[in-house]
Amino acid sequence: MTLRILATGGTFDKHYNELKGVLGFADSHLPAAIARARITVPVALEQLPLQDSLDMVDADRARILAACRAAPEKAIIIVHGTDTMPETAAVLGAAALGQTVVLTGAMIPYEIDNSDALFNLGFACAVAQTLPAGVYVAMNGQIFAWDNVQKNRAAGVFQPL
Image (cartoon, rainbow, N blue to C red; front, side, top):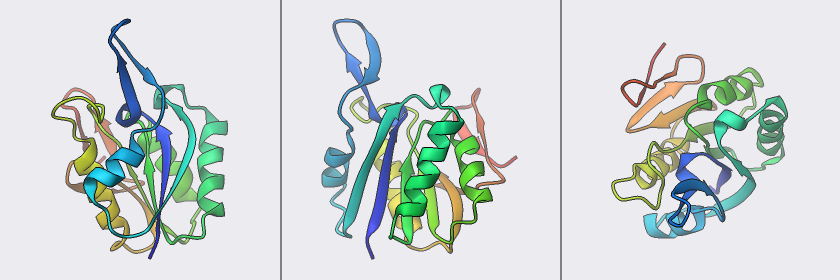
């Protein structure tokens, strides 16, 4: 089995600009994260435009959907911003793709100490290989169906509706 990983940005892929004191995008952290996680299953990494999920519009979600439809792999992991992850999951879930699609991300950027990015990536890779076809959100050791998930911003966690 080969895993397709789609990089779309989000906090996972943000870089800290020390001179300006802000987070932004440069190259994806995913090649380093995949190597560091020592994932031994073959991985096809596809980078879409990296962006904050709060900046995503319908056309961006359509691009993610098109990438899933074009992927020959049966298991797809989408690294996505957490703020609108449920909205993208809903677009994909309604499309009934026939693949196992797992969205994941991070609350703390990959390059920052104590980030949850590496764990979430590994967890998503594992569940994408074991879950039946469908669309899921995998965050912080929990799996949610695409139509039963929300981000609790106050607690900084995902939970069922």
